[in-house]
Image 1: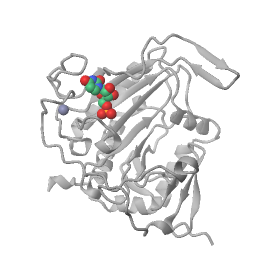
Image 2: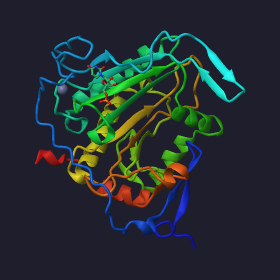
Image 3: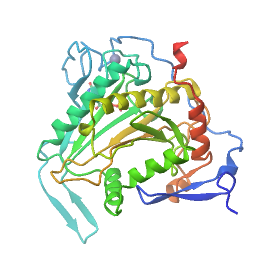
Length: 342
Ligand code: H2U
Ligand code: ZN
């Protein structure tokens, strides 16, 4: 009989309609591959050479103000531009291109160069949540912005260029690939996929990492990355601006607790890419959307051994060794007191 803790199997991701191969019997294999350098902890409160620190010059020649909380600016090397000429070109139905426009911003979480979300005060994280909401509302209200993607790329291992705690916001005319897949899944189902999923995970408990009154962090059943998580609200709503004040506090709380557990796992500032998925801002009603966040960390078995999505995973199907349940158990064991707090 199929035992999910022992036998190779595949799991279905209902959000993206893709499979992941799980090989739990493989976790004991020796590792002789590449080791990453563990990132040195950031010590400086203010780094004179950081282009995100208050009062410092940026690449375009602009100087950052002496900001005290959050600070948002237009990306000096924006991937999307507001006034791209409209157009669509198709050749033989195979070579398809269309214009895309948008706005790219960078958001510093706080003036402190060295404090990641895991080590920020709850009140300061709450200011970050408020800034996310107002960015979503302000950008989403613009007639040519159909989707506001807020994301954070942390750590050298993820290619982040700067350790100063920050995220990016890319607001585009069209909906990007990942939320577009989710939207198709939401629309195709009679009941809300994520309301049903979060209720199921809370009932089963085995993939729950932590929770508060309004949010749950789980290692999704179909996780690709070893310590991938999703942060899900228990209540159904499409976007951050629909959160009550209490829910906003609870979001700040669950994010801090989740990333503290990550940092404590290997006692490093844990690298990851994360992002929020929320209702498109294309002017249509989107009752199908259920707000949530995804965390995709690359690390596998230590601070220096990362998972590579290569080989079979590129040409076939993504694969993992450690099961989602085992990863959740590891994260659940972690303290919510940051390892640097002594
Ligand atoms: P990361 O989140 O990957 O570290 O990227 C930081 C962004 O900051 C990146 O998109 C922008 C880069 O274009 N940037 C500026 O807007 N101004 C600068 O002076 C340097 C970097
Ligand atoms: Zn800085």
